[in-house]
Length: 162
Image (cartoon, rainbow, N blue to C red; front, top):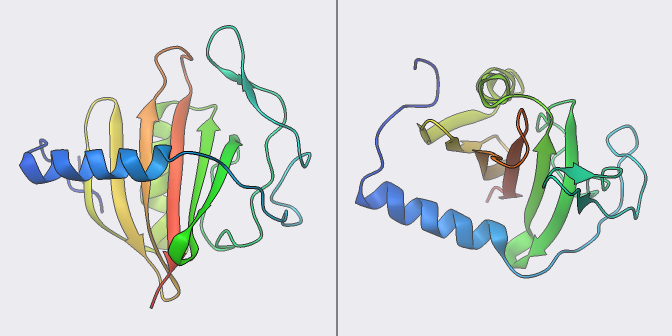
């Protein structure tokens, strides 16, 4: 695969990075933030898994400290928001589009919004990449959802750039 995300097979370092990302992303708890006009749905509505494992309900709002220039797919449903120490923010979404479509969106739209992608990998059912801009650094992780065909989980971990 060509583009800003380099394809390679997971070695020891990649495996350790995936474990670290999983620990950072899954965490224990969620927090609510202020909504941004035009970037959120009904506030305060929890998104619960449907009987099939697919999320149902309205999207949670993107928090006020989510980077306004960071592209989010239009069919994304925000399922959790977590604030961590060091002004780190974890936003987990479910995107009602296929894996390759969302991957192409991220590889195309982040650079257009002046984010540099680096240290990424793409495998059959998951992909991830670090990103930076002049004000933000972070990582996105994309995973297929076997219990919800045609849908992927997209998680953003962001922090202010020092």
